[in-house]
Image 1 (spheres, one colour):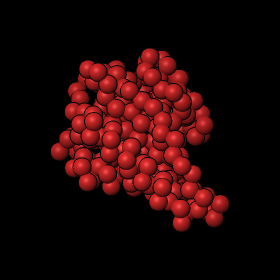
Image 2: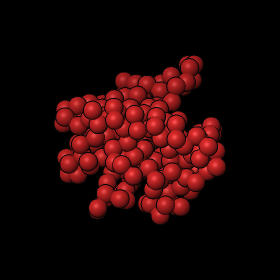
Image 3: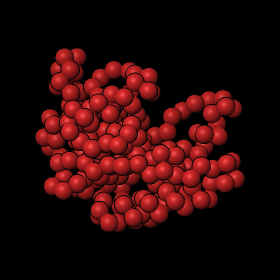
Image 4: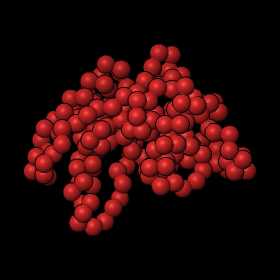
Length: 193
């Protein structure tokens, strides 16, 4: 199944199956800054055009998009609304094209791609870039690396045996792997159903 993933922000990371489907292609879309919430039109139009082009040219059937951060307080509320608008526009395009779209909390895909643990945002971004280097997968920056991690999470839920290629060999992972993979397979089954 051809899949794609997005890390929504002003620097939206994207990843999709490349070639034979065992490696991702990835990149970053630089989106226009919205001066205020009243100026979301150009931003939403640009993300819609880019998403539509990627999904139709690659014939994508399923998409994962990262859930934007949850932050409370006046300082971050406008940024949060803008991030949710970008993610919402990706979901709208998927819906219009009949492409399944799954919104994934960061902790869910990071557990697969980076191994178990709780990291601060910047540390997780650095680990995602390093993980892409370790796998020799292309990622121009941390936004693309996170999209690649999200793509690997999505692919692992849809293809048997794929998870063995992306799971880091971390001792704490191995202690719980039987239960962890049973849970992971149930998520994959729900995605495929």
